Image 1 (cartoon, rainbow, N blue to C red):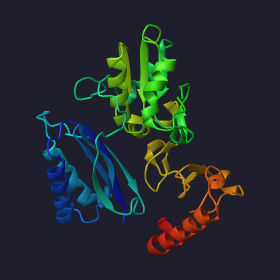
Image 2 (image 1 turned 30 degrees about the vertical axis):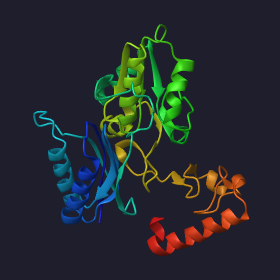
Image 3 (image 1 turned 45 degrees about the vertical axis):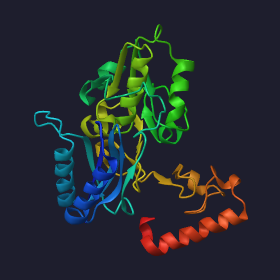
Image 4 (image 1 turned 180 degrees about the vertical axis):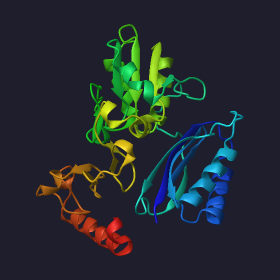
Length: 304
């Protein structure tokens, strides 16, 4: 059966994380037993990607809308982006407490207080074609290698906590008067824009709904997106129209995305290693990964 996937987030104060976590688990057990994926709960809000049979996903969406409703006149309480997968995209369902939804460790970056200006996908091309706009990708380096907007600056960061240092070293509020940012679903840009506004940048824009909404709504012939978009599930990447891409797989050892050419290299071993991580592994670690791969293959078959 087809799975309906929801990437979602909402910056909203959550006072009682344990109680909220248990409510979500209880609802899933009763109304959405096919639910899989991960939700993150933090004092600043909720974030995650989950999947379930379509009717069960619709129930969960309604539950979360009611749970996090902020009297917004019929709009969804959370920012949702939907897609589909032909096989189970996650192994199980988890609701995890965290200190931050997206770890930055900068208290001044508070999207509940201040964020940049949202730009709808239909207006994005006009914005980024402005010669005064600098276009910045806020994702990590393993994501940008799969695809990126034409002309975008890639900060080449390993983790999001490196983004503030990159901004300090490469951007200047006095020089860069218009900054446009994008990420997979929109959440990282909320934090990034809050940080930049707190540090003197005046005109900060971010793509509403992220790359996923852009790829869904903007026709391919009008798109300035090059490549595919990395996603955090077993599909690995999606293209225009949010169609599953068959151009990439993930190394189950280090989680790096691999192209068809990468899979031909001698260091690649399905479920064990690739050229990114093979040199860091001794014989014992390789043997442990092979044993783990055999276990997963037996348990999940071709979905691993």
